[in-house]
Length: 316
Picture 1 (cartoon, helix red, strand yellow):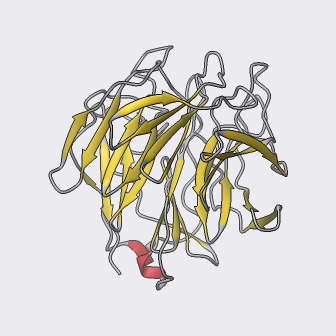
Picture 2 (cartoon, rainbow, N blue to C red):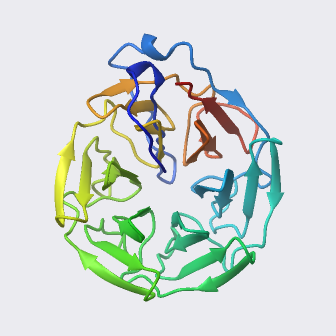
Picture 3 (spheres, rainbow, N blue to C red):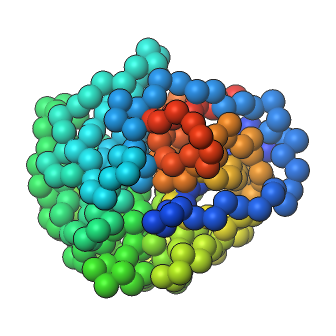
């Protein structure tokens, strides 16, 4: 979840996913041509050591981390915590999570990785920090409200957590801001559209909330709402082409990539259809590093190997 200087439309993209017990409905055929992006191609890379969906992912210091998730057929989360080195195309199993985790909100800040809330079966407020230098986990202040299927992103030295659902399975509009210096949470102005299974990223000085479920029937939204910490206000960006949920987003070359069942790319002005994954799937996690987008895990829409991981290199 990062950004860079604006580029021509030919060099842009984003990442998205969807989740219910049986999985969300796949999006309809693309509404706009994707010819702008036809030179770009996904390729399969080393699979996850522990195949799973509804996991989290962050990138830090050129490495990609996969956090928790639901193994195939499981009703409880995983302890798995794996690190991917793009240069060697290898995964390394790390110190396992303090507790099994799925549907958690994750973010990196400084040299630390934060895992916040989660657990589809019983939303929790537990929050943990992983120190990459010491390779150790520690507890941090719990979320003010237990939640699962929320999203998180870091911006200007703080972490923002938004949306998700609570123990009553109600979609949440509350947004919390975490200050690592004081290990304390504070409330900010609420999300205009309550939702769960959304995707969150920092973009151009804002924290943007994309897609998600807006009711307990799993109705997906295409709304993109962004919070500005400097004004404590929300603004609305152009809606995605395809409503989405159970997906993830990342930023490369000043473009938001939303990837999963569909690949959608926001270049700062409009959305574009991007090159679809060879195996569309939901419940994925996404991260970016050194101009490449990584789509990790998920549930495939057709028969496919477990633990799929895809990479797309975005060239300027």
